[in-house]
Length: 115
Length: 111
Image 1 (cartoon, one colour):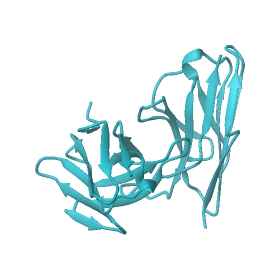
Image 2: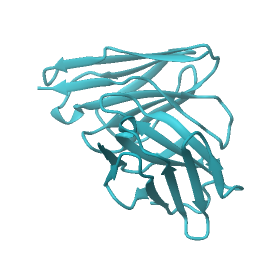
Image 3: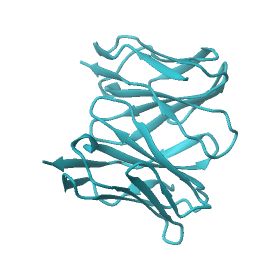
Image 4: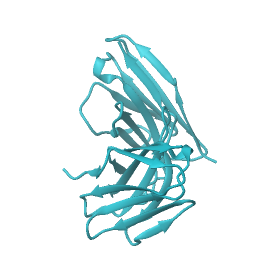
């Protein structure tokens, strides 16, 4: 069966510090991978998605970047965190179907607080 | 741009009653819809999905209804239990690899 891991579970960082959040998927090959951010009491905002190693699409301009160094590894980074980067970060994966019926499976999330 | 939205942000329901959560969408090209449940501090969990060639689909205690004419999606939960308390999101797939999510409805079950 497939599983998705995220770490750390919680993180408190000062403004201006770097960030690295990691997501890994087990039990599947060549998944589509996604990073979302969720503000408190709000919906999910898609930040990045990837359909293969080294292929990253950015959805919104922001202070963050993403990388996919391996097939089942997706990393979210920042060189200098802003207060507005605080939130709940979710990684998700889906079977590469090319089109439609694109059910996504979510990880447990990382709660980031920037002080 | 087109987006998925929800009619009500909160729903309070008596334990044992049925719950109905509504969702409006505006992208007529969307052909796949999903309901997710998110408990506090956790990632969203898949509940049920429906394709645009269907108007109803049933799961265990849940039913999703799709009305393409008015672009409306609903999730019905039968015999609501305390464990059903969560935020429920609808999502639509109208653009290749991406899902568009609504803002969510918070369901609170009263004992």
